[in-house]
Length: 391
Ligand SMILES: Cc1cc2nc3c(=O)[nH]c(=O)nc-3n(C[C@H](O)[C@H](O)[C@H](O)COP(=O)(O)OP(=O)(O)OC[C@H]3O[C@@H](n4cnc5c(N)ncnc54)[C@H](O)[C@@H]3O)c2cc1C
Image (cartoon, rainbow, N blue to C red; front, side, top):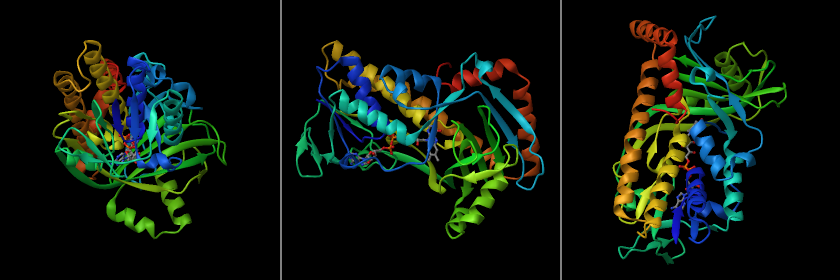
């Protein structure tokens, strides 16, 4: 039996991916105390890359997501909040990478529900129990005092994983001193599939297009990175003050703006496990690495882990080896740790470069972005890399 600890997006996607590789002959069980009820509501929408879409298609999820919104273009501005105009310093177009879209926006809740339903339909056992720790004799203890002995434990219990600690996988992390504030807004004018990243001195403010709807006919998801002290002040602000702050950052290009959901802050940190694998276990998703959401890559990296681990485990089993074959797990770690470490470093660097107001740095970064904007081959390479399809 293969066991997965954590029925988040990464854990459930792994269960379905290994089922797709090996068929129903291999038993798969997913453990998570949250399976006792419906998933907690999550206002986030994720920008899913073409590589993530391909995986979700293979495991039968893509067509269960309902409406998804393609991102056809991304515009980047670098300005102060008080600046009357925000000139675009860099654009990426899906056509730069010969792609249908740069990414697709899908709701976190829709994705998790689709994964859960598909797992249940595929006969994957969904067990509402927490996996607590190894017992030192090849078994893992559950929160009801019982124990399981899986051929492999895939650890997907999230960024604050306790299992990672109990397994001695290590964790190096840093806080950004920022929160990512998420909400859905509606607006008067059509976004035309354009995502906008405003680099403001307190942190990036992203406007990500969603399918039509809402009070004003068109919708976008915002991810507003803000310093911790300002977020604490927002907690005490009334709804109209919060709306005004959102409007100031949103700008006027899409006309009148209304909040469709309350704002929800997420603490932003970066982290990476020292080891992705060990005897009888492998880490995937946020359990293995957490990155700044500035480039919308966290879950995409997690789905990349899922694909690589499912391939490694299935490959070992087809050769008659065990699912926790040490060489197969090391191969998975070699494939994924450098990629995720690189993305963590790049996103932290971008956030640091732009989340300040120092004049000379501002000039340098704008010159740098302007140079990239005029280099079509470089842009093409960047788009392909961000899509998860090219190197
Ligand atoms: C503001 C913001 C915006 C983002 N935008 C994007 C984006 O646009 N694109 C993108 O790719 N990524 C994005 N991300 C990142 C993305 O949200 C995460 O990478 C992803 O949700 C992590 O999924 P996961 O399954 O690894 O972990 P989680 O979703 O945290 O799931 C962990 C699960 O484990 C369960 N669990 C906990 N303890 C135990 C236990 N002991 N035993 C069993 N189960 C347990 C929990 O109940 C939970 O269900 C964003 C993140 C933030 C903060």
